[in-house]
Length: 380
Image (tube, rainbow, N blue to C red):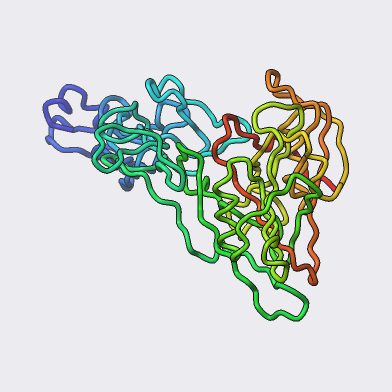
C-alpha cells in the first residue's frame, strides 16, 4: 500500500510508523488480476477476477452472475465476466444478459460464448452477410453461421464435403468386388448455427447392401447412373428416397418413392437423418428426422413394432435408440395439436446378395422439425 494510506491504517497494512517499513508478508498486496495467499501471488483462474480494490484486495472473486466466466485467467474486473459457460444459453439476442439460463432439456452448448446483443460487430448465430450484401441474413442450405464466431466475423461457413464421413458402400451383387462408394452432398436447414447441423443430402441408415422397400407410389427417375437417379429425386420436392437397381433394366432401374400428399393428411413418414457415416458404427441415429405427410405410408419399410403414444417426440426417440429402425409411421396426425394416435417403427434390410440400393433424402424445406425427445435409457 502507499505509505500515506498505510500511515493512516498501520495495523491493516502491517506498517510500522516509527521505522517507516512494512513488517509482515501479509503487507504484500496482489496486483490487479492476481490473488495473494500470504506467500505468493498467482493469476486469478478462469472464471474469477481481482480489481485489487477494497477489503478483499488480495482475493480473486468468482464471477458474480451464475453461468458466466472470463475469457482466460488473470482477469482484473467483473466486466471481464462476459462469456457464458458451457451448458448455458442466452436465447433473447436483443437482451442477452436478461435471458441467461441453463440450456433447455434436449439442448446443449459445448463451448464458452461471448454474451452480447445483436450489433454490428458480429452476425447472430445462423446468419451471415452474403457477398455484396450489407446486412445479416439467414445462412443458406449447406452453410452455417457459427454460434462461437469471433467479433468481426460476418461469414456463413460452408459445411465440409467430400470426406470419408459422407461416403456409403454398396456391393452391386454377390460376385462384385466393387464397393460402389457414394459420396453425398452436404445440406443444412437455412439458419444452421454449427457444423454439427450439417447432414448428408442422401444417405443410408446402414452401411452396405441396405434396401428400404416401397410397394407403391413409385415413379421412374433418370436411370443413366446412380448420380443421375439422385438428381432426379433432388428435382422432385415430393421425393422421399430412391431405389437404384445396379443390374436392373436400364429403363426402370431408378425408382423414386414420392409422397402422395405433401401438406395435408393424417399420416406422417419420418426418416432418420444421417449427419455422417461415423454415427453408423454407434448403432443409433442423430435424433433428427425428415418427414413427409403421406397417406400411403403403409407401403414403406418392414414392420418392427407399434408403440402407443400421442407424442411425436417420443415416437422418434424410440426409433433413434433402435439401431434397426430407419423410419417411423405416425398415424392420426393432428397438424394443429402436433399429436398422433400411434407410432409404427419401420426398418430396411441388409442382404449381401441385394442389388437394389436405397438412399434416403434429408428434407430441408419443412416448416417444423421433428427431433428426438427425452429418453432416459436405450430401449430393447
